[in-house]
Length: 459
Image (tube, rainbow, N blue to C red; front, side, top):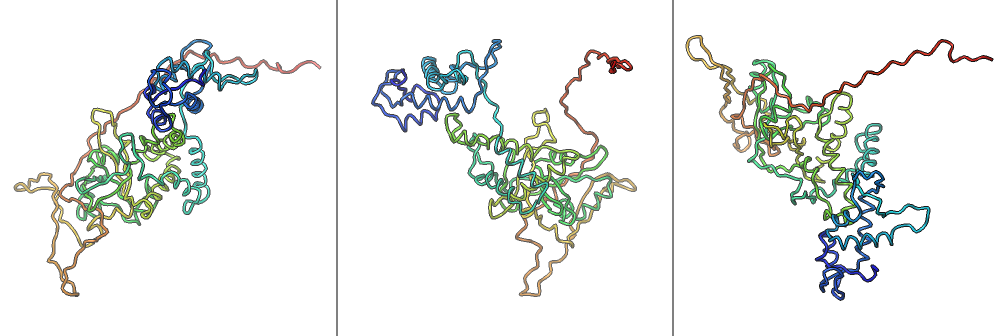
């Protein structure tokens, strides 16, 4: 019987179970399988953990048609625990003895006629709580919403300590070595020329009075939307054919901390072992983070846009709390380009919160550039060649202590590289599609109309 069975850490493949045997076992007994006197544990503890894995991660089905969609209990044990067939057979028999009901009313958990299929876990209780929170957001109040705030506290409280499977943090640091590109669409050259006269003002984030509602900002809240490549920046503004796009580059003036929302897809919780109770407790959270990542990054259309943007805006407001997270913004993969196509982009989008979106010289109304759109070649011949020149004045001395006046603001987070601007004429747009053929089925016979007075009967 299993009361006399022991298994050592060398006869098990799962890392968490190996660690548990090493920590709680002893070498008083000989391993019942390799016959070596190593640290081992009574099979009872392994049986109990294996049953919990079946209960939490697997559904059972009676394979009455022998279609093979599923695995036998022994195969599951071999795969999950990493043991030989002899060990799996023993564990299976002992699971039947210990956990199957011995009356005629309750169904058995373990049976040779059953196959076991892995449960595609959902985010369960977290999703339900999020649904309630967002419902209150839509119907009650956006600001000072305690239910939403409490939920986000529980979700993001340790975000700076989380890691993905490669042990990387979802929080990135942007240094002055990175370029952030912005793109702006114009209808004609005159509009371009006017914008180039004050590029820091016109290509940086709009002032709060002109800031429109977006994915990561509410109406009147100015933030910096940028991308780490020119092509991504152009793709994000979705310019029509025939329009003009001007791109400009910005560099951080200090290190900026951003949360990589796309990395929420691959966060690692617990040991990753199904036998680890901590992994089971946090698996819902991992799956919910994947769902939230998609909600925060996928495009929305039509009537859903306002409600979906409300949710992402509230998350952005929450993360921008300087006292709680000290984050400057968020980053995420673009959905406007095909990451797997032949022209795939490896860059990502960056949104810098209001507190970290100020561009040097953007508020200086006196700073202007001379703009020429054409080069004079000879006589009446001109060639298209946009050029800007900063109009400088002699520096003025301050009335106080002779200190030179300066437009530099220590709160500025970005500087525009005015020598990096590029004029793009949009001559075509490329699309990638996923195609599904619409099948033509057989004709359906139109039913005959009911006979007149057919529903009447004699009295």
